[in-house]
Image (tube, helix red, strand yellow):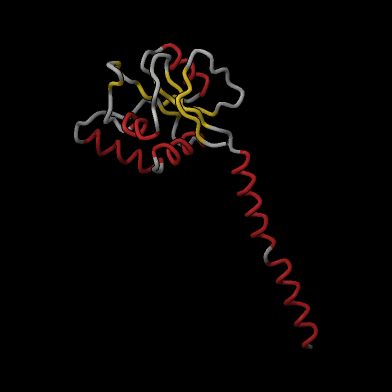
Length: 153
């Protein structure tokens, strides 16, 4: 009877860690497969770092070099937006939305507009002076815009 109990424990230990191994592999693969996010702007704007972008995307800076800046976001829920929020703005998307709810309520502006599609965002930035945005650069033609910052890979 003790022999069977010992064999059962070995079996549970052997397969007990299997789900954790699957989760660890999935997280590793998701991290490694994550494409890089690029912050882009209309030609003529440049020299931004993450601190400057934070101030622009939170409405504390509205002009750069005498030119009005027009930040745009991808729709909430986008994985690219999540990476931008986490790695550049250093906050969650929920915190960012809450920040803008309060700011709008006290009359301090409105959040940057949201664009559904990366191609539309790219087109918007190409054709609007002062426009700044971010997207996953995988397979996109970035001619006609300036890459300001690369986040990720």
